[in-house]
Image: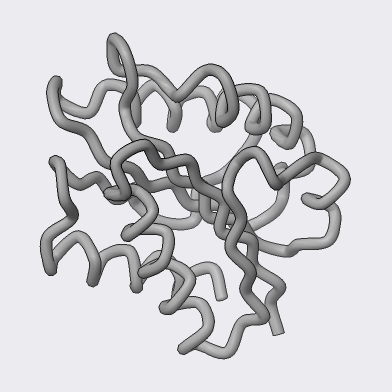
Length: 140
């Protein structure tokens, strides 16, 4: 059984809804899954998990949230190589550049993403929630 960490940061609740859908998909597929807000996750916790789903909305000029999520993600990047990893997040402007940049960053650090990232424009619709469920199933 996979041990899955769903780690997210959410300002408006949109990315939190997505994280909960990922968690449900992983649990429904039989994983031992836990959910964490970014400020409650660390590199020392990362070693306890086989698979990861990270969620962060686009902030500022389409970038990761920089006070809690970015420092946490930087700290755990090294522990993600060779593990199942997926990304998700919401945005309210732009065209998803923050996600493409984040995917490229993962690739450049040797992190192979296990599925296509899921993006939601504002509040996730049924299709985005279903795609998040599938992310959870993929890493379970």
